[in-house]
Length: 305
Image 1 (cartoon, rainbow, N blue to C red):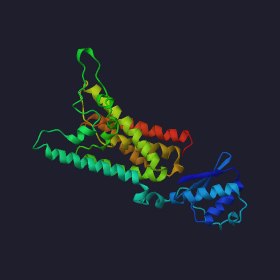
Image 2 (spheres, rainbow, N blue to C red; image 1 turned 180 degrees about the vertical axis):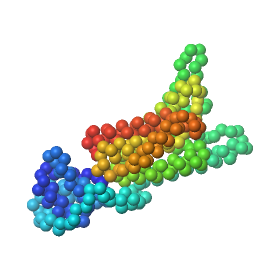
Image 3 (cartoon, one colour; image 1 turned 180 degrees about the horizontal axis):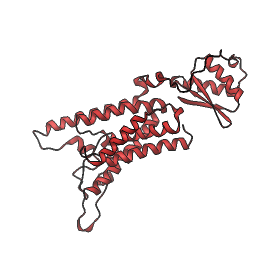
Image 4 (cartoon, helix red, strand yellow; image 1 turned 45 degrees about the vertical axis):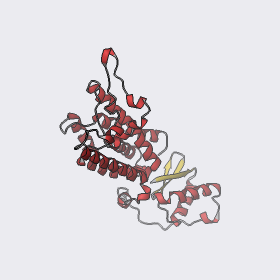
């Protein structure tokens, strides 16, 4: 559900609602303070509704806007949710950012597998990882002669893509399968409801922050040694945090996160921090989650939702 705009008078809101009903545009009108917000359920109908609203605000007396109110129907209980809106699978053209990210992760994973096969016969230098990790091993961190460790050595030399690209790396089949399943769960939800630009901004921001947090934590934890890490999980935690907070603060945005999913993911993150399931990029998870939650909170406070 997306906001088309608002009207200042209740009679005008009712008149415009009659027009939308006549155009078979599924909508809802909410009274918020002194304004009447017009919400559109189907994103494909949003541009038509916005154009009509702009024209209506200019000339509400036009003949086409003089529509009789629809016949009254039995009210639908408030506790009924239109699950068809939530379960409808969006076409690929509406989730282009999601599919692009999935394709890049799969492509990089295939290149990693190729490197693994080549390393059996020649010098074991994983070329793909070396190009995409935050700090390649040929940039050793030094703490000799009382000097501070040289952080961000590769990035300081202009390789700024490394702030983002560790998200594309995955180490093992289960790693990439689990992450891609979560990517297909939350990516389309954000992209369809909030738009491709919003998803792209959240992705870039959470990638940069979660990767940097994991790099700094790993460097400190391992006394300045270079540690390889990767995976989309930091970004995915950001997506989850964004959806979770937005569903709590702005349910009308059309993003819903089941409470059982919240419990499962938070419990999983807590187990990961114990070390019971092996080395995990916990700093990336926590930083990504906090970043996504903050992004959603900021959107609500700035009135962009």
